[in-house]
Length: 517
Image (tube, rainbow, N blue to C red; front, top):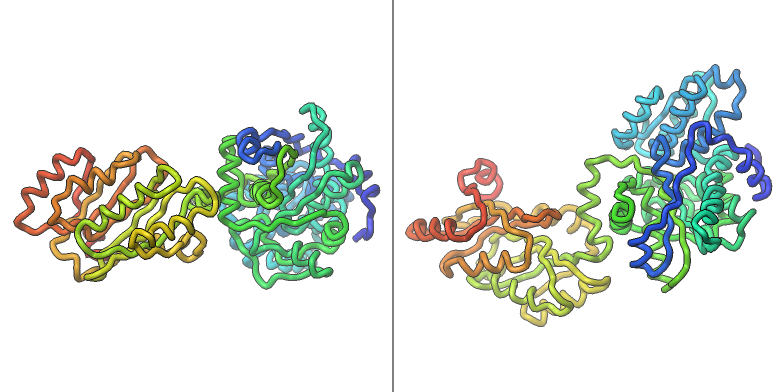
């Protein structure tokens, strides 16, 4: 590998890179909603608009366009979590050569399907990029293929650097020269190496800020240590940046040219995916939202105003099924939702009294986003409750307010197990749930709907089970267990007829009998 190329050397390679046979000049788009919220101008570099929905096409094609005819005839091989794979497969189709793609077994199916649709021969091996990389080197030796590295290659780095070249040109078209910092997601480091080389050669005043997730921060750790650090394991939520060991060349460049590093967590990335959607109506993958999450964190930390930041939206190969998780965690990531375990007396009326306390919490109207409860003890009840918040840091104040009103409360807003698992596990069999009838209701999503329902209940009926989760729709779906003595059956039926909400009785549902009754 060519070593110690200077930013001037890379500038020449970037200016002469062959990327536009396959890539497009992606839009530099103002993020108006996010800019208003942050009081800083935010620009999105829309690499999610590339033909393979990722910037990786640039570096892959630039590398392969520099191969000899003999090398192209033998074919190429690469290891990739998905986006580089699609870039290599599309480049191979354009250049008329064979492409073998080794991908981790954890790769989203949408990326595997996309590579195969482009003519790539997919081989699944290992659980991370590093595992797939080792297997690809073995296949390269066996089949005499040319390896196309996803990041640790000067031609690949130069191809990615064309993004920075475009950004500076597009700034002028937007009528502005100001750009205070560019935020760049880091996996192996190819993208940030190309961007940093171009910017430091042409506009050294612009900060280059690298972004990684807490569970895949190999570059940040390596730069801090002064040598490449190999992680024993990496998080897979942001699969596009799940790299255990960064490249030799990319480490050298990042160590010398990157100004700062920001490390973000999963919830912040989920919130950033939502932010991008609000401004663009596009859904980026987790690695594509890292830069946006970092800008928000950077502004909160440095209290900046009036600056201009660019976020490279580096990919949009999102598994549709993963959106369930993203939507679940986005509000917590923004700290617009707080989660609590609250202990209330197991007596009639305490549930209603707790709802009254929620309605009186300081800070304005709060909506209940989640409420899970199952009768389990004769004296006390534990409920899992979610509430909307207006600003960061409110969960601690709300917990203290519950305590002041006589309800023990545990703040679960930052408890990973509670967010990931516990919220789905509140319930089970209960010997105390005698005379229980189970009903599904559809409530309108408006303040007071639950309180109205509770006010209409007879005081002799006890709620023994309650499950509700806001799903972002106009109506909420709620499962309620109520202990109704047999002699009250007629009165209860009259209550159901008068409540005004659609309902279905599930008392004889076989799943209820197996898991809850």
